[in-house]
Image (cartoon, rainbow, N blue to C red):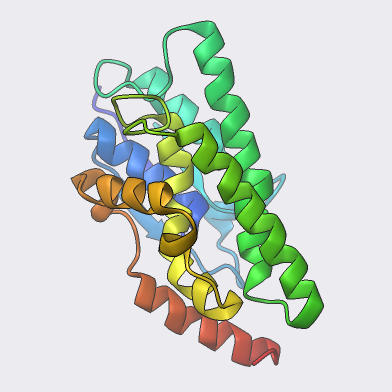
Amino acid sequence: MEDRVTLLDFWSSSWAVRVKVALAEKGIEYESREQNLIDKSSLLLEMNPVHKMIPVLIHNGKPICESLNIVQYIDEVWKDKSPLLPSDPYQRSQARFWADYIDKKIYNNAKKLWKEKGEKQEEVKREFIEGLKTLEGELGDKLYFGGESFGFVDVVLVPVTSWFYSLEICGKFSIEAEFPMIAAWIKRCMEKESVSSSLPDPHKIYDFVLLLKKKMGIE
């Protein structure tokens, strides 16, 4: 039986883009169903009744929720091509550790940074920059976080880089100037078709941020 794969997503969501990159790495064809995050569809509510959030991967009628969980599922089900997680249990545990770190220190602060102003924004920016500094130390002179090949930690981190242009403008700092190794890693990742075809345009993200700031009254 041929696999039926559907992704419930939203174009600007870095969490959903993780899943898109993983599917592209594996060469899996899927149907993308863009969701209205205000007026949630009955399909989304049915497939993710607990959190009622995207992304949701529907594989042969069965839902898999939460982006890190989905990427690991993709890697386990389609294991014959482009392995994302290392085979060694210790290395796999380290990859999961850094994925969790990225969620807590990078994604959470990226989400707050463009919304805040004044001292609160400076505090969030400090935490965000500290997180990137730690990640740059972990990357070191490696091509990718796992070594020579694009893997799980890269899939987890690279989607949020499409928001970096907006964060730099809102936070008045330069990632390339402060983190040259991270900047070089981003360029390497963007040379991959699976990444460049999945990530939204940073300028389109910035227009979206301006729209959200206006709606929220935080211009």
